[in-house]
Image (cartoon, rainbow, N blue to C red; front, side, top):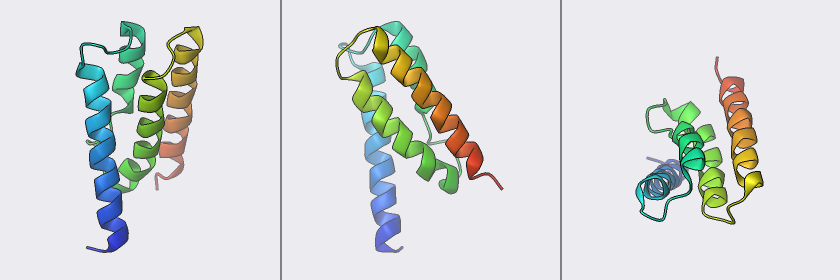
Length: 92
């Protein structure tokens, strides 16, 4: 396995764990934010799609643990829309 592949796998693992931690923790964001965060899971995707989706999941997790206000949910919804488009862009 190349160094790039090892780094990508480690990034994906850390991001998946962080996302699940935020979703499962007692101090998790409000339910509407948790609802949107569920759609950033990426472990079920094939490697080429997982690599793209992982980047968005990382940012979504960071947004979700930041200041919580009306714009937090707006940001996550727009990020989800961007993630979906980016994943579709790499489909054959």
